[in-house]
Length: 166
Image 1 (tube, rainbow, N blue to C red):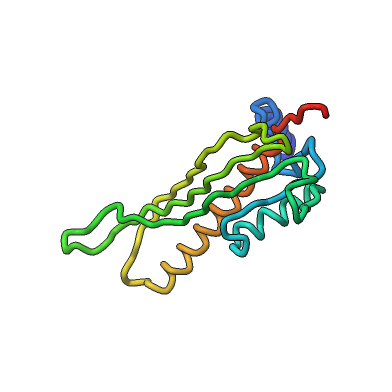
Image 2 (tube, rainbow, N blue to C red):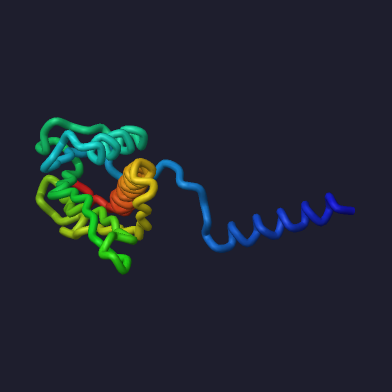
């Protein structure tokens, strides 16, 4: 008796998830084959992760913008931290972690494919002075997670690009 109820609950959950448009993140399908990645700081972990994601989606990264279907210009990438709350003695209780990327995309004729924009993410980060080492590790993990989410957001924008026929 218990197994059919569990199966019914699983079936209902599956139907509800598929009905709401939920799907696992997979590879994005790109209309273009080649891309030139123009980054202000090409050696950052963010750019390395973006390159890996593009290559995983079968986009050839070129060394020159001249033959690229799309030029993606990463103007800036900026992690930041601001104090959110203080306790009665003036010590930090909570930070707000930010991750901002400024970008734009265009084709060989300089037609705008992704308008210049800043994509920003933030997360509140409670801070405990009794566990300083753990807080540093947790902060690094949160930045790494935001960086991965940022790469996914950019990949989604790239997947929506519609190139004009040549």
